[in-house]
Image (cartoon, rainbow, N blue to C red; front, top):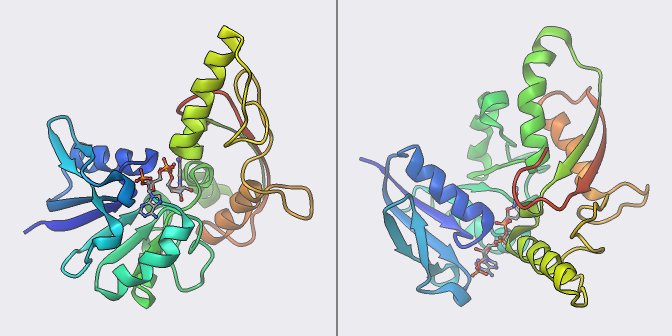
Length: 244
Ligand SMILES: NC(=O)c1ccc[n+]([C@@H]2O[C@H](COP(=O)([O-])OP(=O)(O)OC[C@H]3O[C@@H](n4cnc5c(N)ncnc54)[C@H](OP(=O)(O)O)[C@@H]3O)[C@@H](O)[C@H]2O)c1
């Protein structure tokens, strides 16, 4: 018998990718629920190449009887709904930053620290790291096993997909506006992103770094080794998909 899996944020960049991957990898799911805000009720959401599911509103959804909830709808939604899903017996895997540094919630990258997953039983919640941390620790893990890394200096060049649907729309609209000589408007990003790079992702902290940079430091320490020092510079670049 397969699992019943709910994807929260199924109409977003991450949720849609989750549905693609569940289908591509033939994850043993008997039933998939595509959940989003009430704005998206009835919207078609693709599950693989040949299946389409109608989106439902998270606010009317009952998690009882569902095995896994993949949350990809931001911290506010996770705060309101993840504990309810977890209390209903559904294992929550959350993509937002809300639970990442919670000591009762394991922060997992399967290729790196799958053993830490047992800790999920405390709250029935598992957290996923920031996208840049996730890919970096996969590369660091075998090096650390062989040679004990002391310090990492990293620069990331992150596509606008990391800022969700709104970030991708802004790059498209601004790029078009540049070519047709329309006025440019910054809504999602603090500066023009078309034909520009912005060393500012998430909010600025007191020490002048950004929260995105801070996440790379503390998340790497939680996943890999608290002794590793990380110095990160995170830059948003005018590329639609694919961080480097
Ligand atoms: N993009 C990335 O590369 C990336 C990487 C790692 C982690 N994350 C994290 O993953 C989360 C989602 O990011 P994203 O890029 O996919 O964002 P997104 O494209 O803006 O999508 C947001 C999703 O959340 C849903 N949503 C918003 N408010 C809701 C509500 N009140 N109730 C139910 N659903 C609601 C939206 O539904 P509607 O369409 O109905 O509004 C949509 O499905 C964020 O926490 C982000 O930090 C993103």
